[in-house]
Length: 195
Image (tube, rainbow, N blue to C red; front, side, top):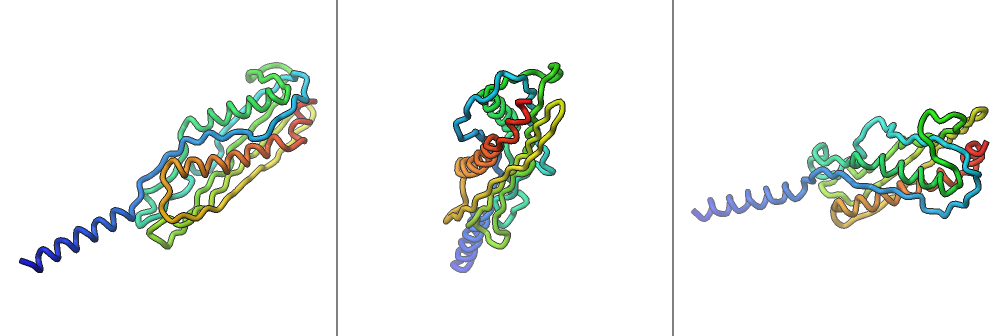
């Protein structure tokens, strides 16, 4: 009877350890922001703003663990709408007038979320590190000129424990903030939209 109890206890502990190494998926509610003050340099020129998600996969990466395929990290559906609000707000702060698609004589700013990655080591049961990267592609277009740039940011974080959803949301948002801010630090974008 003692051997049977010992075996049952060992099985229960083993099961608990396996469950502890499995991570559930996370959907992050990121709200990236342009983090620099913008000076109004335009004279209310009309600009159509388009924001889109052009990533080849909606999965940023996994949280690792022994079943990484079941611990995907994604961003919420509302994230692109929130990015659009930030882009429109930045365009207005620069002194432009955001107008609807089809407005005559309007210039155009298209901002695409081209990359968003969360990479954790594949060889361990626990997430000890995350390499996070984000990139936006922005295209400014006037009637006579066009300019396109890619604006990226990255960060590496180390952990003593698997980060929870709130931590991952904050870390991914910080990298997205940096990348989105770089779009509006590029003077060529503003110059094209002013024409």
